[in-house]
Image (cartoon, rainbow, N blue to C red):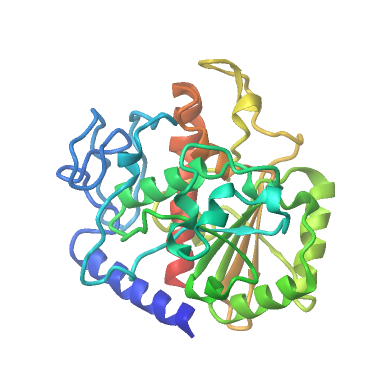
Length: 333
């Protein structure tokens, strides 16, 4: 199965990185930290990220500059290793809406080139469906930060596909958001179950309150009627494997978090509930799904350029560290 082969290769690459200086590399010479210009590019005033500690864990991110959503497209472009152009991590978003208006218009001009799908609307909105919320800026920003802050080889072209796309099984990691009213087709359910049992990993993000949780729970029970989501505590390795998180992250939408351009409102929950994270495991104990409840990592990625206050409190300290942890955990387990 392609998924398992890619995860094995990824694990070997990560192992090599760990033995030669750590998965989180120093950014000096690679474009700086959160203010850097990318690997091998000139910095934009950002300071270098701290290297991994002797325990193998990154302790904190220093305060650094944020990405403005109006950055030039060149910031999101970098070269891949010409000898291994396909041995990269690709951020894959799943479209579950199945209506033409919900899919970014760029899709229709790119069906012959799947690898470019996620890039056609860089800087623009995604359309009317819930699965396209935050697209493409969120996907672009996260791919860039993952590339910038780690030694992982990252595809600069995020992908946006359905669960019935033949290329699904080429990607070991997929992302779904705004699932509070999601209804999967029967074929989607079948494909998702097969994908996950064959080594794939699903991250579910951005839904709030009990009613939306009940819908997510019901849809996942269609996929795995024999399995229950398991509540994850802060002690779980996913919260510590790269960045050391001291509390369960809760990232609100920027308009909830801010009372003015640079003043935090003090609100972190859109529902009044605390953040909760759940895992769904296979028979061997491998986590196949992480469900991020009452939090919105995607907005933390997309909206990092809204204000310094939002970036510093939510993007830098929570959304990016947890997102990177989840990818690392998914690809090494």
